[in-house]
Structures are given as C-alpha cells and as structure tokens.
Amino acid sequence: MTDRAAAPSGQDRLPERLEVNRRDAGPHDVNSAGAVASAIFLGTVGVLSFIIQPGEVQGFVTTLGMSDARANDVVGVEMMGVALATILVALAGERIDWRRLTAAALCVGAAGDLASAFLTHDGAFAAARFVAGLGHGAIISLSFTFVGLTRRPDRNIALYLVALLGYGAIGLWALPTVLARFGFAPVFVAFAAVTALGLATIIRLPRSSRGREAISPTAAQLPLAWIAVALAGVLAYNLAQGIAWANLSLIGAAGHLADQRVADDLFLSQVLAVAGALLSVALAGRGGRGWIVAGGVIGGGAFIAPLIGPAGGAAFGTLFLVSVCGFNFMWNFVLPFILGSVGDFDLGGRVMGPAIAMQMIGLGLGPILSGQLVGPGGFLTVEIACVAGFAISLALLAGPMIVHARILARR
Image (cartoon, rainbow, N blue to C red; front, top):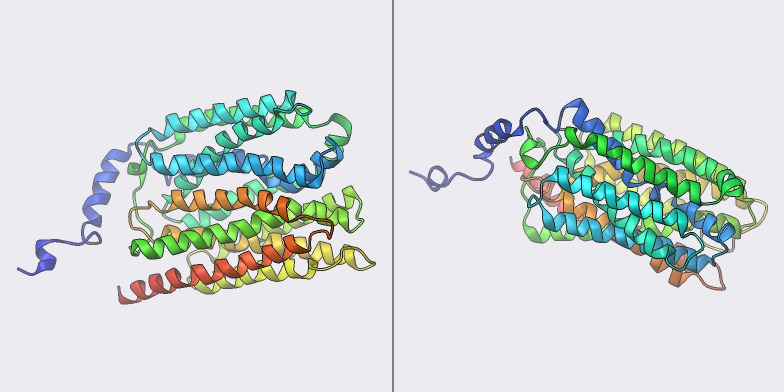
C-alpha cells in the first residue's frame, strides 16, 4: 500500500469532512438567501461609522471644534477598538457560539453609539467611540467570516460592498446638512438604533463553520509562512486605505473647497465605488485574480499620487474629484478579490478571520499614523505614506498569490 493510501491528504478527506458538515449544518446553511442577506446587513451595521469617516472627521473639526490632528486621533481610537475586536474574534475562533458572540457585539456597539450621543462635548467622547468600535469591529469580523464560508466569497463580498456603499453614498452626501442642523447626537442615536435592529438577524446566522456545505473550488493549502506574508500584505494595503480615507475631506478643505463641495465629491465617489463593486461581481469566478489584484492596488496608489503637492489652485477641484472617485472605485473593485484570494490560502476557511483583523488594524492605524504626519506643511507626508503603503502591499501579496496559482496549476 502506498503512503497516499495509508495516510490520505486533507484534500482527499474533503468529501468526508463536507458530508459531516452537511449533517451538522441544520437549516441555517451559510449559502441560503436568508443567511447571506443577514451577513450583508450585519456588515453594513459594522461599518456605520467607518464608511462615512471622511465626513465624520471633517464634522469633528467644523462641528465639535477639534483640530485636524485631534479629529484623526478620535477616529483612530475608534478604529483601534475595531481592530482589537477583530483580533479577539479571530482568537476566539469557534470556542464561542457565533450567534451569542454576534448578539453581544451588537449590544456593545449600540451602547457605545448611544453613549457617544450624550458625550460629544465631553472628555470621555473618545472612550465612548472606542467602546462602539469594539462592538462594530466584532460585527465586521463575524459578518466577513460568514460571507467567507460561502461557496462564492468573491461575489458575496462584492454584494456586501454594494449594500454598504449605497448607505455610505447617501450618508456622506447628507452628513454636512444633518450636522449643521442637529449636530452629532442624532447621528449616534441612529447608529445605536440600527445596530440594535441587527439582533433580528441572529436566527439566520451559523453557530460555527459547520454550516459550510462546500469549499471554494479555488482553495488550496499554503504553508504558514506564505499565509503570514499574505496577511502582512492585507495589513499594508489597509494601512494605506486608512491613511487616505480619514483625510480626504481634510485634503479637500485644505484646497479651499467648500464643505458641501467636498461632500458632493465624496458622494459621487461612493456611487462609483458601487460601480466598482458591481464590476467585481461580474468578474468574480472568471479567473485572473492576480492581474486584477495587481491592477487594483496600483490603480489605488495612482489616483492618490496626483494629490501629492501643494493643495489649491484653479484645477484643484477637478483633480480632487478625479482622485477621490478613482481611489474609491479601485478600492471597492479590488477588495473582494484580495479577501477572496487570501481566504483561499487555507482549505479550512480559517484565514478570513485573521485577514479581517489585519484589515481593521490597518484601517485603525491609518488615522493615528496620519495624525502624526499632518504638519504645518499640509498633507504631503500623509499622501506619500499612502502611496508607499500600496506599493508595499503589492510586493507582499504577489508571492503568496504566485505560489497559490502554481498549486492550482499542479492540481
């Protein structure tokens, strides 16, 4: 008898493992329409604050009277709460029933948002945003995990992005008017109410990964070292995104654009971001992930690069509009392919949780780092750091993706 017959590989045992999973999944299969819709709704709940972060940062400055650096620090504290929660969820794995964990996260997020509504002018405001970040970060991690267990993660992540970007476009467009009339308190009360509404989805969620019926046909097991390199690439990519996203409104304001003009430009960028996500839906599963990821990452840096230099001038308004629209389109076009690719680096579907943790750490560190880089000279250093982050992420992601492609070719 050969060694292969005596000790079948993980790939050979997949049918048996999947059959066990089918028996344990019960009626809450992660591929059902209700389960996918619930995960997508929870994903939108998770990013209620983050997706309108540029307008929020600008509102902290114009409505609450914070400095640019202080506004970046506050959102950075919130995002570090998000990042910490994603790490804790990844470490918890399946030790805690996912339904109970989701319910707890929703309660914590709603409590943090409600506290924020009453503490906008209090020294404890940043602490309240940190608590909200903990709850929303856990929701983000869990919702991505639910989507990552489906048969078509690229497509479902893209649909997820379409939903949250639709909200983001309306939110960024309306936020300046809402803040001018009512301030931040009603915004955070609305966040708390929508977050609490997420409790209605609990019955549609899987309790663990046993709800998975089928592994992605493009999944392959990579060595741990290559998985670590890929996760570092996800971190670098999202660090660049966090730096840019937190400062786009401030960069527009530094170029003497009116607040509503900046909001209108960001609204249009969100519309194009939806188009980017829809394009990724159309291309999902058609192959060529490596080229798509490379083009998307390079494109993101290429649209930020023109903003490097002194802000202002007759042409700055057009330049700003093109940059934010192109940046947001590329971000939401390529993100499903990055996460889908990294999720396929492990046959057990265990990499998605750590990948989301790296994503949230990068998005959380971005505003904090940019707060330290903003100086009297404006946003030059911030913009250079953003472009450098894109370049580093592409270099780190390339190796694991090439190894993965070779494994698939041999299979």
